[in-house]
Length: 457
Image 1 (tube, rainbow, N blue to C red):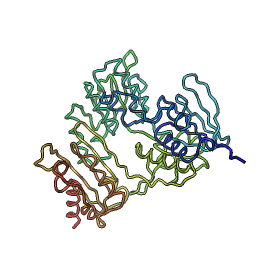
Image 2 (image 1 turned 90 degrees about the vertical axis):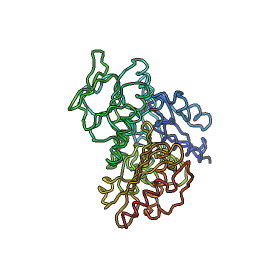
Image 3 (image 1 turned 180 degrees about the vertical axis):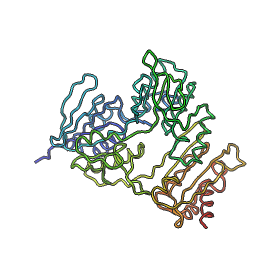
Image 4 (image 1 turned 45 degrees about the horizontal axis):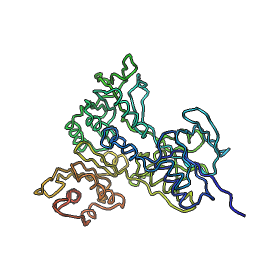
């Protein structure tokens, strides 16, 4: 007797959801597993990291940011993707979700045997006076990026204000500067990129100023002013009102876990959906991955919510393998991230000074000033490398790198050391590549490791 076809329903048609769907399909044909996905946006499987570069005109072709269209999923993988459809309720007892068509408002119930939740994250939008003015954007989805670019094209603003100095905030500041807008950045912290240690964050602040961003640090935003046309006209802080014609909120994101929580799925201490290593939630038949799912930090051991496309794709792959009848686990995260601030490249991995101390480590740190190439080779530029190590054991807990071209990807060597619990002595002995066009004879990572070894001696 033939097996009955089961149904996998995916909420969210981006990195995590569609990675899971694709992996499940590779292991189970359409006759065994029907796969259908719903997403409230207009795009499937896209590169969210490319949004600031699309807004700034570095990437001009919107289609190039879309990895696979619904048509490709349907024709090549027998996966049905319905865009413009938002799942507004999950009924686990019934084994169904309530789907609302964005344009018509019509609703219908869709059944499932297995449910994959990939609802991602949503921008933090503080409940401040005037926050509903036109021209204030969070930038999380490709639809958000399209909306910002369209608004700039239509209204031709001359002044932009970024609220918050996370990765998206800095990348949007660079995008607006590239468009010729007078760009201001406001943050309640004393430095941009709060996950960097202060000594490294100061280098980023200098780079922002160099390419024209006007910084208003140590100022909390209290509200927004709107003009008579309803469009944003100013950002109000405790010290001043900064004129604005377009505003981007770069205050970070939070896990989009409310839908799952309302259905009775357990939420972890980070605010994200609690999952095990196979990406299973607290409810049988319900899986979660990506920005909405909680992760375990491999160094601190703590549950964390980290919104990165790299993790979303890996977690989605793990979930899909398991959904398809295989076995896979997700090993955790260490928070490796890179970004670009004008000519400066910024990278971090593992724990910074304050994070390590908060996790109970007694630490030491070493900073090495070096060059990206041999000092005598044309194009050599400054690079600053910092390593955070555990005092006593010498274990590498984290690292941060700030420098010009050729700097950021060096963090990968540090990430491997952190991931594998290597000591700084072991890192110092690693056989890294050398040639004058690419590195001094002592690579900047090894130079920092040497300093750390000397400090621990």
